[in-house]
Image (cartoon, rainbow, N blue to C red; front, side, top):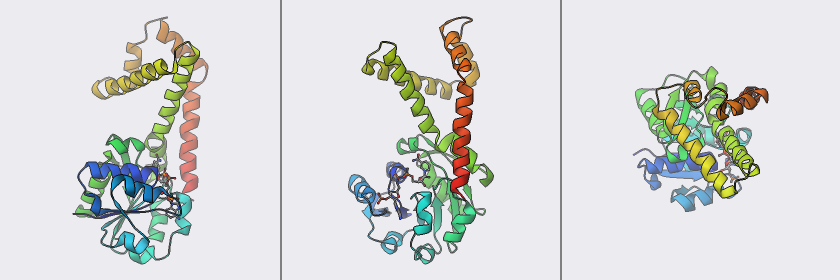
Length: 265
Ligand SMILES: NC(=O)c1ccc[n+]([C@@H]2O[C@H](COP(=O)([O-])OP(=O)(O)OC[C@H]3O[C@@H](n4cnc5c(N)ncnc54)[C@H](OP(=O)(O)O)[C@@H]3O)[C@@H](O)[C@H]2O)c1
């Protein structure tokens, strides 16, 4: 069975580790290594995967190397990784870091894949766009699909779209949770208790997401279906438009796309 080595053991690596364990990869086939902090020991203790002591022990016996540190750590990675990743499949989740740059750091890897998972992947409900540096062999394509597929849906895209997919999917949960939090806070201002606001807003969010999933209708059609002329939803939507909701979301996603580009430089 494939052995996986994770460099970086933070939020995204945890989501991936829990995802692949839930899909049946046994914990003794997974090793993790972090930086000088506590995330790797914590993840190992919590999930039962092996805590590596250094890059050599991390990569020993591994077929797939998952790069899950921060983009800023890339220049500080041990030079030994060049040799240690020889012949391995390297899958990176680093926002903005291009395949060309990854190829420069892992010149001897047999294949390099740039991907952008999102945190719903920790419960198998993610969507992960990815882009290989070169066309993958059938075996590496299957390995990539099974690693990233453990997080939910996969979505191959040409690399020039990787910054845009970060705005749509990778960082998307952060934007949606911000909206949920703001709606809950507002519901309290309108007279609900925090507990009431939490139940009502979250259930509405979850129910709307399920409706979107199960309905054949577009988001616009589903919106129109709850909007009677001059009714309550109509009043709210008018206020949303008057207060620049579309502009706010456009600025949000554009800033995200631009930061992804910047991180890649
Ligand atoms: N969070 C998301 O939703 C999301 C989505 C898509 C992609 N990503 C990408 O996932 C990557 C990790 O993000 P995150 O949110 O998981 O970050 P995080 O929770 O801050 O985790 C960063 C990890 O990097 C480790 N680290 C620190 N210095 C290191 C070094 N010199 N060498 C190796 N590892 C080192 C940290 O270990 P210590 O605890 O020991 O310091 C920690 O395990 C980023 O590149 C990000 O672009 C994140």
